[in-house]
Image (cartoon, rainbow, N blue to C red; front, side, top):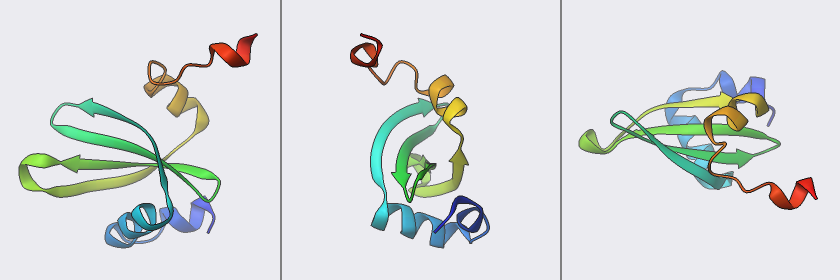
Length: 82
């Protein structure tokens, strides 16, 4: 599956695909959301979860630039810079 195809499927199906085929890479908090970043099929997707309502609010694709900006404190790339 390619990213454009993934972007056009319903939320419930996106969540199923992410949980079935994705690998969790990182997580973060924003307001009342628990957000987890997953790698799958050569692209990255975030799952936005609202614990208070036990509900997935959205699943969205992220570019490499967005990942670096949002998760810069989550990754240690010092080994790559040597």
